[in-house]
Amino acid sequence: MARTIIFEWEGREYPHSPKSADWYWALGIITVAGAIASLLFGNYLFSILIVIAAIVIALHGTKHPPIHRFRVVEHGLAVGDEVYPFEQMISFSVLEDIEGELPPLLSIKNESWLSPHLTIPLDGVDADGVYEYFLHHVDEEAHQHTVTDLMAAWLGF
Image (cartoon, rainbow, N blue to C red):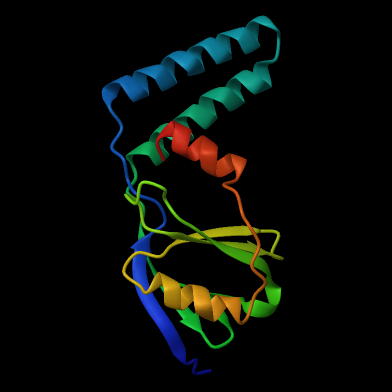
């Protein structure tokens, strides 16, 4: 099924920030402390979970985010091969950096339970044009950064 492309651009899901050796040492110290505390309280399964989670966080810290292809089409937003129709979008907002150092972000609240909140960088595309197009198809609502977004920023992701 051919779709008319209104806007198209490429971008990374988030900017990569290299982690220092101190970051990994801090992660290791917190992991060991949490695992030992969990063992002292007799919660062996939680101790294993803490170690596995720390390994996953460390591996994710070394990974560079992939480049995604974003397209605004007639009936929705396409991220790679996945299409999010306008009918399933609850609301949208454009989040802008106060200092102007980061590109604006398109924040979309979705009916999908797998990805209820999409945050898409509007770098390399006419952000005002995307905003105007979305304004005609989806309700605009003020969005705040989610707790997950804030934790990821705090961890350096």
